Amino acid sequence: MTLAVALSCGEPAGVGAEIAAKAWGLLGADLPFFLIGDPAHLPAGTPVIEIGDPSEACAAAVRGLPVLRHAFNGPLTPGTPNPAHAKGVIEVIARAVDLVQSGQALALCTAPIHKQALQDGAGFAYPGHTEYLAALAGGAKVVMMLASDALRVVPTTIHIPLSEVPGALTPALLEDTIRITHAALVRDFGVARPRLAIAGLNPHAGEGGKMGREEITVITPVLECLRGEGFDLRGPMSADTMFHAAARAGYDAAIAMYHDQALIPIKTLDFDRGVNVTLGLPFVRTSPDHGTALDIAGQGAANPTSLIEALKMAHNMGAARRR
Image 1 (tube, rainbow, N blue to C red):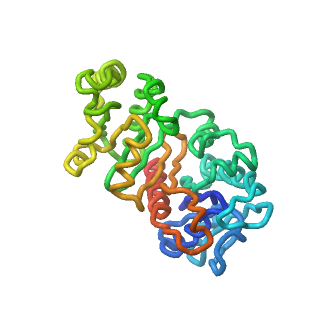
Image 2: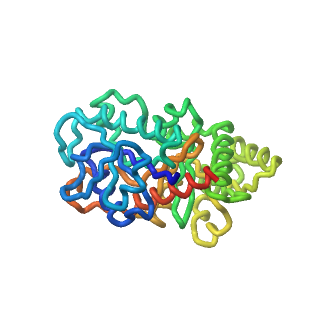
Image 3: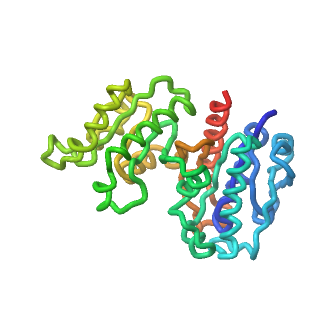
């Protein structure tokens, strides 16, 4: 049986429903997916095919956007999150995870959520999607990858103030990040022998201790240990020389030490096609690499390119795991 990708609706006041409709318009049945959400949130005129089960999605995609109904409380207010919707957004994510983990969907793709809206409306206790998905997966250790045809990059520390990064950057965290990334490249991306480039934390990778010692005390010992196990690791490298074309040709993914060190290069190189991938989960999860775009919600102006790339990556990764 051909399985479809499950797409969770995300924040109803954002552009999730709009880009889902546009993605179906461009993909049709060539890459079957189904939306989990309220059909009333879709743009007027969207050809909706309500399904009762994910197994119906592939056939339905020929005629319209397959939607597995999940009713929401309260009216739709484009551009302004409605607190009454928060509980439904969280429920849809959990429902989508259940469908993927039970084998009823090939993979999970998530439309963007508005974390503050979920916290205000439903007391959401997680910093974001990634942490909630890890909890639903039983507390799995996960890392965030941003991926496009131009670059794959993983930040070791993510959503913390820059001043806290040196303290958070522990040998155990760096080792876990490298191991999870390596395993995912083999399993989900078909890279038989991954080559990883590891950034330093400090300018010029510390310049031998003159600009910081984390490269000496934290990063290099981890790399030497993993090289002893056969990992192909380059670094620690000066981050300002890692991301030009010739450098990128020498590795399959880059490991950065903090959020902006990872996200600035990929968003500069390929802003519209970047995909957020959660590595380390027992199921495939991708997401477009942009937010809810409340400022343009309901105007028909949202670009579906990143969502389309996320759906394609979810499909390819899900198929790789099944193989």
